Image (cartoon, rainbow, N blue to C red; front, side, top):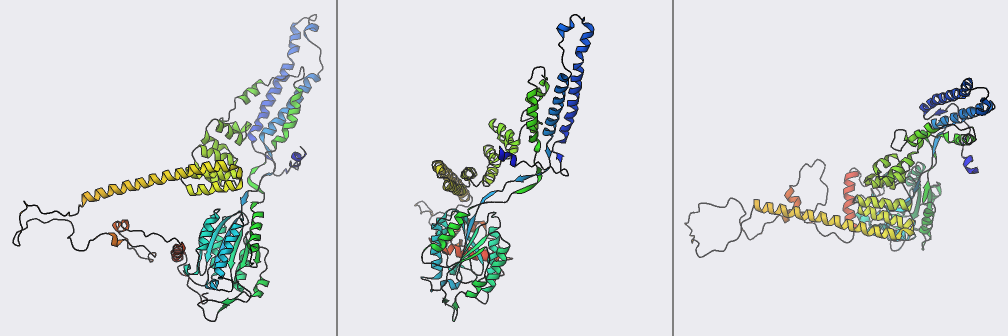
Length: 577
């Protein structure tokens, strides 16, 4: 009770004082009419005394005090006035919005310049960095992890995911030959990092594995961190003595200690490389410690605090007096009006909160209307899900960082056919609350079954369309067929005249002509301005080769396409290592 009173702000700002529902102040007119009627009714005994004999009056009328009329009327006016002012919604301060709880992430950035192939750290700097990434993920930082690689151009390898095994697989396949532009372009790297991390509301970690930070890099990192909410952890993958860069003559790659001494920022930490896992383990523990972040409270620019509830207590105290003998006041009309007000009426907001209206409509299975009434986001999301608005439900459940929110989001994503995302959401829910394991496993099976059914249906449709098209094409353009000569056939000679020849078909030769030779795998994008288009027949006859088990070649081609699309003007600099 004491804590409740502490949150009440009784310091009224009269400059901002106003009523949220000023039209309800007209109820004072109704209160005035009631008082007048009661005053008229109080004079009714005097009229009866005129027609009743003086002998009978003592037996029909009891003598009372004048205050027996004044006090009920006075308390009626006070209680009614307090009730009217309360429902009118006095307000003088803005609503305080509680901070939103969001979860931090970690972006792993790997340097793929040529200097990372140096062997001062065995087996190479790059291979040791991959092992450190694996050790970091094995330490289970708890946050969703993303993967980025860079050299002359930056490339996002994997968006944020809670499946660490996928991150380790892609990190293990990264190599320097995959980079389309050699060198080191820190400015482009920071621009890409800013693009990826900008939607993240919680202060998160950028984990950079590199072998050297130059003076210009230090300035760029400092400027970036000064305008960002995130922190940068750097693990130097080089020894103090340095090492020659393979393939580059007379070049030794090593870190300048003077640059590290000048690189001072509260959001930046240089972690020395260790033989064990204490380096990456400490960073993982720090991320787990600050995994959930609650944003600062703020004042709403539109909503005001309704302080009418402060008048409830005096109204209740005054109402108790009307239970006394002789103080009865007929409230039938008011009770009739209140009891006839349902959540579907226009005046429902007079008596019920928005969430109460939504709950009543939800219980009545009117989920669409309940979704519009609810202010509480988890309840609004549940109503949207029941109403079949799975897109809205998934978006609202994503704002709930609890295990229940992740589980419910998985259900909504499964309904939308986004089965892989649903599986990730179920795994997040199980990780946050192991008690949901049974429900998660059951939902995962249903999600997998739904995915199988959807894939089977799609495959059947494709097969049916292909068969239908093949029959149509065969009927339209039936090829020549070989026919063995029969004994009754006419024997042709060199002077036999042929009146009619086939109007379609190809001449048989020793070479069998097919459309397969037209199908070629596209290894590059079309050049700008190239308006040529392949024919539909050529596209349909492309034969896909089996992709290699190592995704390195796939990433190499993907990086080339991204470089031509997003960085077409970036060229290698003077320092290509």
